[in-house]
Length: 188
Image (cartoon, rainbow, N blue to C red):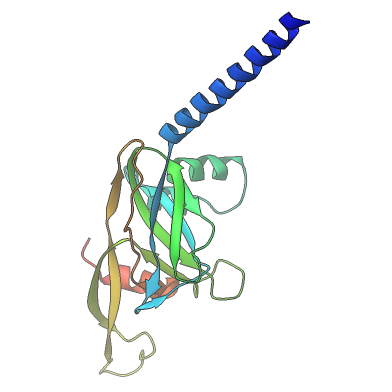
């Protein structure tokens, strides 16, 4: 009977040791990026946060996704490196992702329709700038007014293996339709 108790104790210690080692290995594989989402100085709660592959052409990959199927999942898995389901009431988020690499941090805030559409707010981590563009509401007449639109120039974030990154704040969001208009006027 003593052999059984010793074997049981040894087995429990072995399981505990393996669990501890597995947690350390898991911590090496995963990391977090945290920050705050705000728009015009106000916290944005309920925003979906994505860490997109910053070394590939994420825009082209996402442009190929038009229905949910296996090829869409494969395209998304090469692009999406981590996420957080929603920023909290203060706009704070913590996205979990695979450790190491370069990513773009993007956020999407639903306009309340519960569908991905052109009125959803979209924002990136990066430098905030402004541009004057023709007023989309003023399309008639020889003297079309212009408006100043504030937008973000996306910047990549490099994540060191095993290191958590903080202070990755997304400061400005635009409705998706307006973001598309702005991109049409930016230098290539």
